[in-house]
Image (tube, rainbow over all chains, first blue to last red; front, side, top):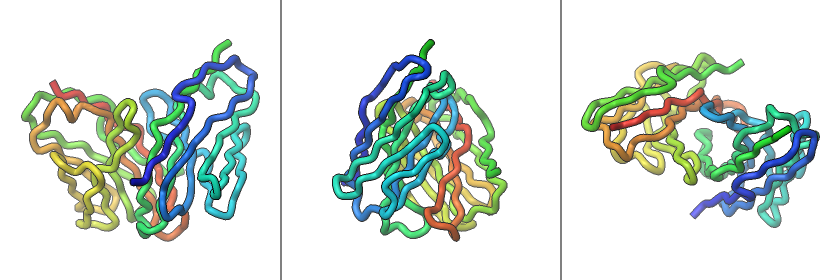
Length: 115
Length: 114
């Protein structure tokens, strides 16, 4: 069964600090891995998408890494801001589902940035 | 920018009522999806559609049906709402032609069934 596990479940950090969120997956065959940001009461918004051949990708202060051998990914947030407070969801796409792209979602890490 | 809109942000219905959730996308995407999101469970796929009048079951289709009469609109129908269908419902759409088939999400509808 395809699974995506994220850690920690929740995290509180001070504004300006860095943090790293983890994602482990067992999805086969692997196609790509996505990180989404979801503000409370809103839909998820894509931060990065990485395919098998990519091991790092940045989007502003967000940097995602992928190790396809160990089936692990991380999302590093640099110089956190209050607006980074949200849930961060790791999503893995299986490679055998055509263009409809069947996704397996993690349960998310809830990040709170405080003053 | 891709825009996916959902007909209601919040909805309260009674057990046994028929409920319609509407989703509209403005980017001519072929694929549309309905998910539900519950605490501790992540998003789960209910149904998806890859073309007008085409639909396929997702992981949890029981108690739901869908309709796609026009390319831009995808409706989720709860034939007889039950309390265990209280959840956040998210619609998404994606374009077939460009890998990795990015999915764009709507703002969600929080449905409460009493």
